[in-house]
Amino acid sequence: MHRAHLFGVTTACLLACLPGSASGGTVPPEPVEIGHESQFVHDLYIVDTTWGLKPKGEPVKRVLHQPTKHSANPLITGDDPSHLWVLREDDGRFRMWYQANVKNGEESKLKGNYSVTVAYAESADGVHWDKPALDLFPDAEQSNLPHNAVIHHVEFPRCDASAPQILEVPEKDRHGFRYVMVYTMSTVPLNGIRIVGSQDGIHWDAASDRRIARLSSDTHNTVHYDTAHDEYVMFCRSKNIYRAPGQTKEMIDSGESRRGMSRMSSKDLWTEWNVRPQTILMPDERDADLGYNYFMAMPVHRHAGVWWGLLAPFQWNDLYASEIAWSRDGWNFERLPARQHLIEFGPEGAWDHSMVVCSPRWVEVGDEWWLYYAGFDGAHGDALARKGAIGLATMRKEGFVSQHGPATGGVVCTRALRWPGGPLLVNADAHSGELRVRVSDELRKPIPSFNYDDMPAFTGNNVAQEVTWKGGSLATLKDRVIRLEFQLKNADLYTFRAAEEK
Image (cartoon, rainbow, N blue to C red; front, side, top):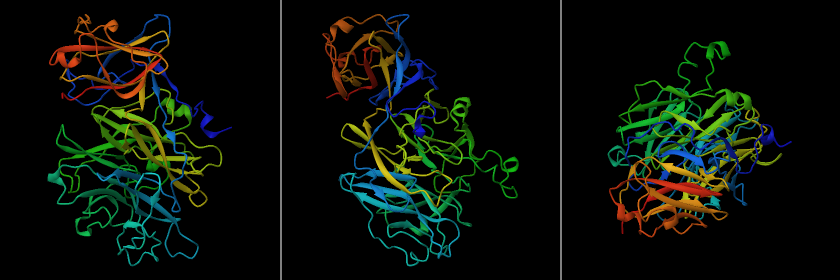
């Protein structure tokens, strides 16, 4: 039996166990000022409630949509890569920074199974990748570094630089650099989470390199600027009180150091953060039922007001999975009840059979999101035997989770919101059914000429379908407090937004 089926998980897109009106975390004040950002409808932030049109029939449900693995996978092989970060430049070029894990041979004088460093690759099309022979470091051979290594401290032969992230920060905190990277070091005395700057993303300025957190979080830690609070937020794995000096590695002494995902923040990005991380997410009873008693990582990316976490449930010391989590406030993260994997394990013997290490930094290509991930063909505990590579999975833009209306029909009703102007655009798939939208007031009284019958049914599949009624466009209702009621018949709604006025 395929490993992924052990707990009833299939590679198809699966329905979650609960209706779409499940708990939604932080609730906004109403009327909600939505601006022109995309509004995700999979939680109770912008959605007030959902219901099926048949009281005893099927309700509206949330659906996880797994991305499609690219036929050319694996795309990058040769140095057992793991944690990665990908950007696309304005000229269309794809750039990747990833953790290379180069096995140390029997003749190596280095301690440990492999040498770890941050390496670099680039691509014109995102599929065919080149690992340039940069040869930046004179001791590369004795330190067992790959030719495309970009982070290395020459004074320490065992580099152990890992888990890179290219930050998006305000100009005031760039320190004159075009690129700013956060990465992790395990080599004493450089150990901890570090930051460094670069002008080209390849040559990193050693003088700028400094530690920002004295934390042994040997996983993919990510830092983000929170505009609402003018501070930097780091998501990490909290080991500061579990592997403190003097403790042994015995479980009774070290504690469940791999269980929780944590959060810490600082007003200043470049100085050492004088705070301790706080645990915000732990495995629960559902995880225990599935055998995933630990979390290995949760790198985070922010998009359209949502903190998206690529959670890594971990089955000690074997399977390393991927799962989507989200938060509206950066503190309270939610997950779908069924706990489906976002990117499923490959079949027995495949390059991604046992471990999937997914980057949260997707790349937008047309109407798609491209998610890059590392995969391994062996268990996490088989460091010497397993082989790793990097692959690509693609999905529709903003397409992680939809609200699905049954064939008998269902409604997704928003909170009261103030329409900012411009027409309504929906990201929806109704090619097997139909979608209609009614505009009502705060008490759900339909606004004349904006009822269901006033709108031609949408029966297509579009990430930005404009909706119009007999009354015209929603642009005519600028500054009105309204509700949107989406009627779905065998159709999926992902997001909606107010387009900018022309």
